[in-house]
Length: 550
Image 1 (cartoon, one colour):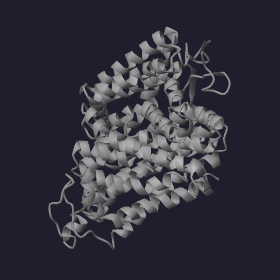
Image 2 (tube, helix red, strand yellow):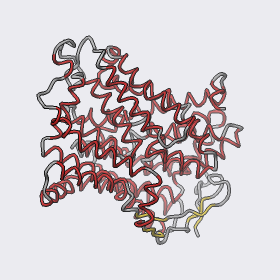
Image 3 (spheres, rainbow, N blue to C red):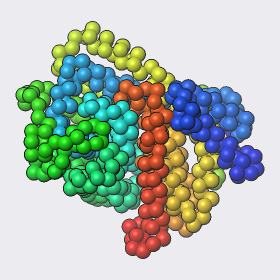
Image 4 (cartoon, rainbow, N blue to C red):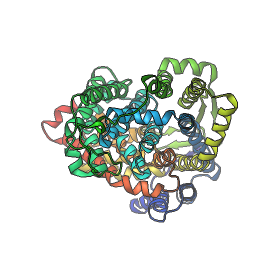
């Protein structure tokens, strides 16, 4: 048994700076030195192992085991999801179906700003709610590239759009996990997050369009943006507060897509933005360009949409807890990870009492979301007329395309798990927790940091949920408020976590440019996280915002 040490140098500043080394190495390599993502991730991993072993006294075999454990998690389930989403995209692209799909979306509106709202915000939120784990960015990034968006814009805008739904992703998994680690009531946590995020569900679509085309372009279509945001925010509040966390995103996303599509039948912008560069190039909203226009029959359009409808239905089915339980009952394999399971002990103040950390790798190969996507891809391939040999050829080509992306994700997760089990990330968390009356703001940024480090709101909640509860109780704050703030603040970290950036670069076929994507989204990420922190601070101290806490 090895107990985590959070101040190994007996100096909070030195210990915190040491804990930050792996993150600084990886992000600096990506953003400033333009080093390829898989190499930057491996550099970060090596530095994390050195800091854990030398600085934080973690046994060598335990540290190496945690890295391998994380790498395996990176490949399954996360890499498995990305591989199969891109496989489906390749299948539809080679048959020309994706081109028809793209032009049918343009048929709703030829305006790039409105296409961005429909795809990145509304449609992406549906995939976040149903599957999570990188699925929405992979799907929407590929779609935006197909519509003519530049790789940087397609990647960055997909990441910005995939924020508001993250706290309820994968059918409420982050909230369910948060309730499990804190012991707080799940419905109270769901409701609290649902009284924080709807504000940002209104802000994010405006922010998204502003990031794409600037203030003038955003103001020109504000009615449509408001409809998309409000049609998402209102169901998000109602479902989270009066039903629970499970169907929040799915219901809100469907509401947003339907309301925006219907609204665009009766409203058009005065000036069309037909260029994917975010600049006006003329175009009369009353002309044929207003609806984009295409020469395909209804049957051809339905055929093009069929693979994505199949994907949506199967991902939704695979997310239903009862269905997952049924599949797990006949397929799951649990592995007590050697040299790591029940070897590490989390200590106060991170845990209320000393807590032994489990490390059980769950190979749920049948119930995994990636398996559902794979099945959807195979069904779609048969529907499109592929033969088995052709499918195998496309799959092999997809594997070759993603080899460096999969290596990067494995290395990123290896780094994240090494910092988690060594207590390095908890040292960073404690630095935030020592901010006194400013804790509501910095506690929210702790959630942001957790997602930026782990790539998952669920993982951030598991990592820092207990710390948030303990710190809140010591400071006389509502533990429900601060636990929820961890999840709400975390959603803004989703756009800068390395895993999501690699997914975006892969989906847009822009691998090797992850540093540019990071620089594109970083300001948006920290600015939105700060706004969440301000809202949580108001909820903690200022009337009438304090009424939102109860």
